[in-house]
Length: 499
Image 1 (cartoon, rainbow, N blue to C red):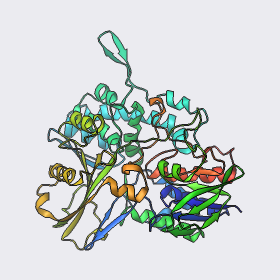
Image 2 (tube, helix red, strand yellow):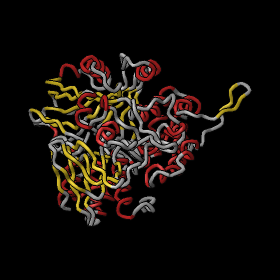
Image 3 (cartoon, helix red, strand yellow):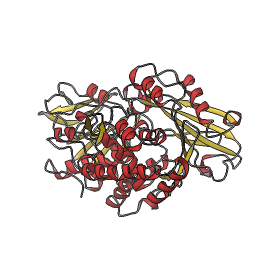
Image 4 (cartoon, rainbow, N blue to C red):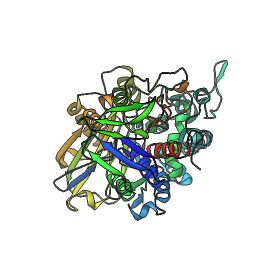
C-alpha cells in the first residue's frame, strides 16, 4: 500500500483519488479552497441555484465507468441523469432558427432542412460522418491512452478526411475548422453552427485544426445530458465516492512545496509548515501553480520532446439571472444565440487583447429543474460567453450578453430580479489558473498546439491530472485523466491506457 498525496480537489483529482483508494492505496487530498469540485461549483441565493462551471455533461460513460470500477454501482444510483431533448436551439444572425433533437441523425437532418433549406441537413450530416472518422482515428490516443512518447506523430497527422476543394488551378483540403465550414457546408449559418462548438471551448475556428469537427460529432453521437439539481451534484457524488473509499480530505490546506528525496517526489509541505510524506504525488492544479511549488526541477517543458503546457487560453464570463415568471412550457434547455457578425467577434476575441465583440455568441441555459428555483413562478437562467482571460470588463460584457440573449428570450430585461456576474477572476480564484484561463480538450494536428503535457513529469513520482494535462479540458477528459494517472501508479510505466 502506497501513500499518495493529491494536490487539489478538482474533478480529475477526485477521480484519480477514488480509483487509487479502491486499488488499496492510502490517499490524502489537500485543497486550498474550502470545497471540492474545482470549477464545478454552485451559487445559491434567495432560493435560486446556479451551476457556475459546466452546465451540461457530454460523454457520461466516463463517470459511469468510474462508479462501476470504484464500487460496482451505476452512476444513476447517485445522480439523476436527464437526456436533454432538444439538444439545442440555435438562433442565427439572419434571425432564422433551428431546433436540433438529441442524438438523432435523421431528426437533425430534417430539422436543418426545414429551418435552413433543402440540402442543409445532408451537408451537415456529411461533415459529421467525416468527423466520426476523425473521432475513430483519434479517440484512443487522445482520450483513452497515455500520451504517446512519439506524440509528434499526433501533432503532424490530421485525422479529419477533408473533401478536396478546387479553387482556380489549385486543389486543397481544409486544414482548419473554418475552412471545413466554408468549403464543405456552404452556408454561413451551418458554418456558425460548426464553429460554435470550438468557440465554446475557447478555440479560434480560423486556427483550430479541421479535426475540431469531432467536437460537434461527440454531441451528435453521444447526446447531451443534464444532472438533476445541476452539475454540482455530479461533483458531490464523486466526492462522496472518495469519502466512502476512505480518501482523506483537508480543505483550506494550501500546498507550498512538493518535497523531493533521492531525486523523486516524496510528499508535500503545506503553507502552515506541516509536512505530509508520500510515495507518490498527484497534482491537479494549473501549470503556473505547479511551477511555484516544485523547486529545482523543470517539471514541464524541460526536454526537447516535452509537450509544453497550453497558456494564454481564453476564459468564460457567466451571468446568473434570477427571473420573475416561470419557465414557459416547451422552452429549450440550451439556446445558442450566434453573433450577428462572426468575423468581427473572432477578430475582437483572438486578434486583439481588447476583448469581446459588441454582440457576442451567447449560450443560454434554461433548465427545467424545480430544484433550482424557489417556486414555479420564477426561473433561473445562465448566460455564458467566451472572453479573454484576465478581463476586468465584466459589467460591460454582461450587458452585451443580456442584450444578445433577448433575441432568444423576449422581454428578458423586464423579468430580471437580480443578476450575478462571474468573471475570469472568479475562475482564477477557484482553480488557480492565471487570468481564469480554461483549458480546451486535446486535439491532433495543428503542430501539437492543442495537445497537453503527459500525466508523467520530469520529477519521478509526480503525476499531473485534470484539464491542464493529457487529455485536456472538459468533464469527460478530466475523468479520463484520473483513470490514466491511477493506471500509471497502480500498474507502473508499462501502463498504456484503459481497457
